[in-house]
Length: 488
Image 1 (tube, rainbow, N blue to C red):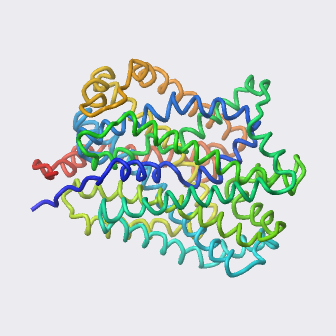
Image 2: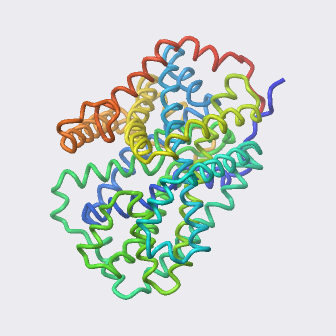
Image 3: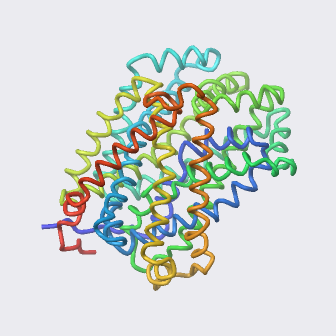
């Protein structure tokens, strides 16, 4: 006997879950850094433009596939494109699961620093040494386990009592904490120089191709478009839910969270550092900015320990809400193979903990996986566009998107973006990131296990794709073996 399929209890339940999926650590630690490195206000223009030329169209595709098929990534690709293309859905699912394996480590870091901010006011004063000591110890294993256990418990409780209830708490709390951060940030002396930097564009920078490519990259990574996460949540949509409106709300809500995070962080750097030093801090990488520079800056302000705790609590909520969506995506795939939810999440949680151990133990391994599967998401996004193209973009829009109950229909712009712009953007992004990798490592770019190398991407991608293509028939049969659909 099959489990009764759950649905989100209301539109707000779905929207908060979608926001929880989209708003993650990338909004809080990557966006301020990349925006500052690429001219502040000038960067915002291409970043916002690509929200409509990459992210929202792919969110619409995911919503349409999930709502119409009522399957996770593997089954959805098999139903839309034909069973011989199930390997594409397997790739999307595995790519996001590979990110889940180390993303839980990040959530654990955030929990550790939140607790440290409360208990130990000296973290900021010795931030670099504290970070080195923490990451070289056994502690990341413990906090990685706690993060996986929290996510597993929420998914175990189901869609309404687990995912929906968690996001009803996490997302409003996250925005509340970020607003507190903005208020404190803007009351610091010299903070408005950072605000002007963030919102006053230097128009000449728009002639720099790098600003445009970084804007596209940030939009692609930050919104979660093409990850298979929205597709999974769409499985639990009510029949009359509006696909296009929900996609716009998720995309714009994600960008709003990024701007609020930028206002909470960039003015702090400009308040305590010179302009050059502030830009140096922003260039220190995601972990360097979040776990070394910001604690150091917080230690210099009155009440800095409390502010640091608020920051890492917000980062924890953002990481946890995204981790939940990744774990649900993996759980949904196993449920499509015939497992009950409770058994599926035990498998996902166990696998997540075990396969996350190398990233918890080694920053080098962590960075390698972040590079490989972060870029792999570009392929996932392209696969979604290919699914809509194979189905027929016009047919996809009219039959699967503009369905009964839509308040905001998709127009012909959607057809052009999915059919032409997304394949072009994908090609440019992959070529650019590989070219950068070669320039960073001119003598080792081909090596298969180096950080940020082309070789490590091609090796890991090739192995996974080859495995899924060879075993495609078995994957399709296992995923779609239950002909009887779950009742709604």
